[in-house]
Amino acid sequence: MNHYLQVQKAHLNEIDEQIKMVKKRVLDISSKQITDEQMHQRVIKGEKTVHTLENKLEVQIKKFCAISAHNVKLRQEIQHLLIERTEFNKIWDKLINNLCIGKKFMLDLIEQATIAYDQREEWVSKLQFLRSKAHNDLIVHIQEMRVMQRKRDNDEKLQEFFAIKGQKRVMRDLEEKKLKRRQQNRENLDLQLERYISIMEEIKEFTGTQTIGEIAKQFLDQEEVNFGMFQYVNYLNKEMEEISDELGSLHNDIDEQNRLHMMREGQQADRLDRLEHEYQQAEKEANDKGQELRNVDQKLKTIMTGIGNLFRMFRCKNDPLIQLLGHNETINNYNVLLYLEILEKNIQEALVSVFFREKQLHDRKKLKVEQMTIPEIKSIPVIDQIENIVTTNPCPLCIEHEQVSDVIDVLQHPLNKAQIQESLLKKMELNLALDKLHNVSACHLPKSRQIIQKRYQ
Figure (cartoon, rainbow, N blue to C red):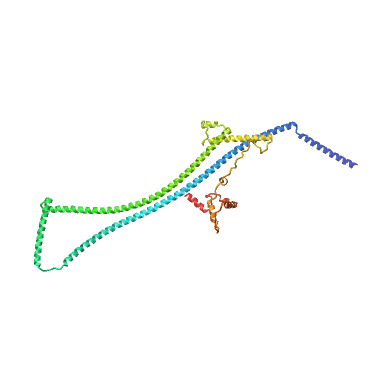
């Protein structure tokens, strides 16, 4: 019985403990229960938090739109700089090629001029040597001719002497002949004396003197004068011979210069033809570039007209521009960036307002996500150019090396369009296909270094 009472007391105590714990839990729950005032305050606080978060979201959206617009501008500027870089590289390569061609042409001209100058000195020295040799040979020949002429005269005199001495004498009537000869000699001497006397008289009459000494003196003086004149005539003849030699050499030089002139005239004519051909090509390129420039100007005018239409469509205000440009509202190349800046700002504001209105409509009317306030305009998809997908062209040296190294011992035929596409797809599927998309300066082949060295020589 006592044991039963103890057990019952224990159960009662345990029940009391459980009752206390339940009361305590009830008190805790009652203390944690939210009243209507607290619920109202919590709702007000939640609405404020939602409004604050919406404001922050709107600010972040505006910042995001501004950053997106700035990114678009930067992307356009980067694309423009890439295009300018490509054009600059083309112009640079063209100028380098022209410089290399000019250097090669200049080196050829210098080499030809050096060879011509060296040959000129050589031929001038040879001509001088031949001229001096010809002059010496002429002097030796003249001396030999004079010696031979003297020998010939001497031989003629000896021949005449021996012919006279070799005649056979006839001794008949020798005395009579001697007498006749003496008489004849006397008569001849008398005649000669008379002639000499008459000549002397004429000389006296001519000179106006009667003494023979004076006449002899005048004769000696005149003989000296005549000898001087003879020497002068010989000197003039010698100078005439030298002048004739110089004239001959000058005629040869003139002929050589005429030949050089004709050769240079031919070269200059060829060069003029080449320059005329280059001028025609340059003029054709200039006309093509001028046509491209006119097309670009026409496109720019169309773009500026579109900018003006958008400017009026979005009802942009140009008051700052009027103050800056002086009441000149025409859009041109100089103020188009200012109009674009204002237009871009208004477009951003319009996008933000449209986004905000779409959000309000979505919250109020429970619109679908696909439904927009402004209907989407379906435009033709823009096909990107290859320069926008791949930043560079395939390396010509690597392609040439691949084609040269591809040795096939069968007859080759040109590929058609389908075969070319199939071959290109096979090459693009290879792992090393993208390694060939680089410039010549980044190529690892030895020939690229040679080309770069020639470019900077």
